[in-house]
Image (cartoon, rainbow, N blue to C red; front, top):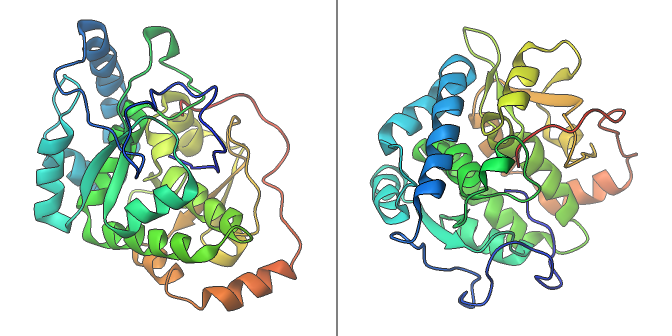
Length: 277
């Protein structure tokens, strides 16, 4: 779930009227209808089959630990699983939330998950992140201790970043948490939620010869622009998840000063509309 500053909630799909001061809302655990459960089931079946082929083992381990079934998942039950394994919990949100609220939740080991799910006519593309993207795409890896520690450390760096540097951190999130690949004995595998929650981008990221697959290097990642509504022209490939945590343990003020002196790098030329957000 990539976050952007929100001056107001006009035009956003979620219901922001009942949220608390920290932008959270209660999940309507008994408020999902048959069509919403059917949408979840359709997406779950499709993406699970693709994940079994193309996702990294850590994602699949987390998916199995959560014991997701074919009804919209209950956040409290999933939180209990995560808390026992890594100390994380899920909090419901109405949709996109501001950067400061998002980073604050991550720093406290709380992951925001949108409480509404897309319509049937939006199975393949959605402009805003919904419950399926947030839960299926992000939550399984929070059961992995190394990745879970990275997410908390990332949130802490976000709290500290300030408005002048937050776009650098957004790039780090985009190219790792949303669109990251990792090397395995069986070739590159997916861990990014923006890929694994999208049928089209899953196949493109692994099988296409169009995108560049570059070794992960945090400084380069934070110099590289991205587009939110296109297939990615570049993916950054980890050797292991420890690289992510190590990337959050550097002197960030010095890193920001160095990056300010370096030229920006493009993601690449425009490409067709891609992922389900």
